[in-house]
Image 1 (cartoon, rainbow, N blue to C red):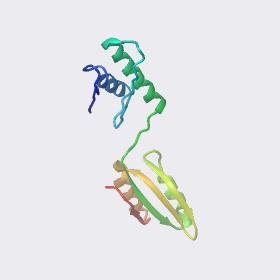
Image 2: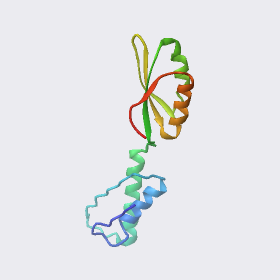
Image 3: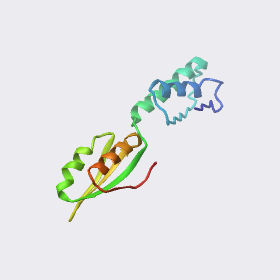
Image 4: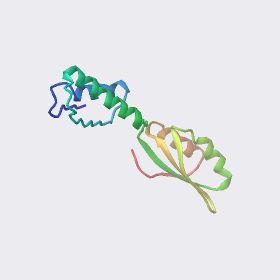
Length: 136
């Protein structure tokens, strides 16, 4: 984590903005606040309140999204095995990214890294061929 006051009095900008990020339980976030002097001197306490509030409002307006490391797995099966593959899809740990139907059914799954080994064991047990597209 890093915070900078960028020319403001020490501890009046960066730390309050970092506190706003922490208060929302976020990581991998960045906040920038631009302040224009409007003729009113806020003092250090006023600066702290304004920077914290501006950062909090910006973060709340932006929203948050949970992101997990995933591995993509591609599966190519005959139609009589489609239901078995569909039962393995358990959002959000195993999410269906794409499905294509031609002479066979093809599925592309995004699998959280913690669930990859278990899914691969199941697919092997069911004798369903698969291949990893990326990830660990």
